[in-house]
Length: 547
Image (cartoon, rainbow, N blue to C red; front, side, top):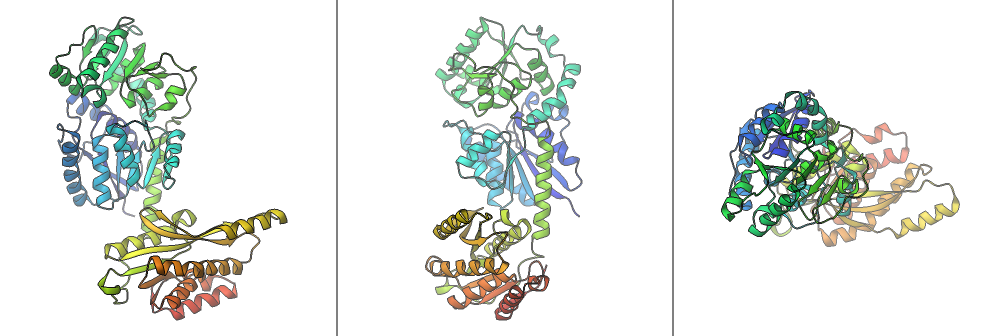
């Protein structure tokens, strides 16, 4: 089987580190290949090239060289360039990292081209108005796979109503730190170069827009670092953005010891040797914990709340740390392996479930009054959570119809399970079932009308069928009012085929049957199922072949 192509978008130092772990995991598999794109957001050799060399990252297939300018200008140029790359490469999925402008540009470009997106470090929230927060939220909204580093990130998504495609995998930066720590101790000479003694200095970085774009904000941050230097020397690794801002505002660095940005191995060596960390970087807050160093975050909020709760980090607006404890939230160093496995498995399902080529020709018919053709799809296997292969197949059908300019919506039963043998609980559950109402839901941008039908281990299949068909009949009048369909598309299963026949006759519209997993009526011993299946196939206006 031909490997599926993953297009990875990176652009900033933290993304190079995260991608190092995932790229290695992808390369170790035979069913995935990676094409890496470097937007150029971080372009300085000390913040880009040296990371690729030390982390043994593959040379980017594309280097876009886009940096500088405002957020809108930079992101816009990236979207244009990334769209051209994606159109040329035709990837099966796009992988984005973190919360930078490169993240946002990759998300928008892929979403516009209907390429599925995986977001590494999904679900992080600082709950403050800042560019990075906007980038995170937009990326999460358009991604198919949300790879969360912590349980807190999963909870954040759940509060926002996002449950589909969420995977708790652990932190890829922890993967890399574990792998590279000993290499840094053996190879780095940064302590000798800077003349530093172990445990005798504090390490600082400062680059966020909220601290550098305004003179008063930058002066406040530098004053805080200067006060910290009175306790122990502060080594500030100066980002080019911060250097330019300070020069433009006429600010000096006072007692701070300023150094150029360093390579990843040198950064790990400095983290290993320092007494503490002061930073506005999200990644460095975690890395400080990986080396068990106390950290002060030069911001009013942080997305890495576990470091605050664990007592290893505090905001500069807080006076002291919480009681210190170990943090188990970041996983076991195998996050990248899990990400690669999810991508490979899901993309393999997509290939297995997708129809061979496009859908067969639909009956020649225009919509009412020259409008778009409206197709109602009946499937008890949608969404995917209830039936992986069948659910993906139906989703691919909807996407194929949309590519033809067809307005397609789905009607699907929502199983209401009753599994108790206690008569009081049984009848209470039946009453609850009768109170359930159909509701339209958006599933990956597809509108689905979900209605309840009765299921239970001790119910006969005929009960399932009758309550399912009753549910379809209940919602048909509502569907006709809200979505006057021109055609019904159903499967040959006894449920969907018979429901499709019912909808077709009541609505006076043609019925198309798709035999997607074999003739169900032949495979079952239940006479009612076989009868309903044969009847639905015989009553269809058009039938199509099996996969």
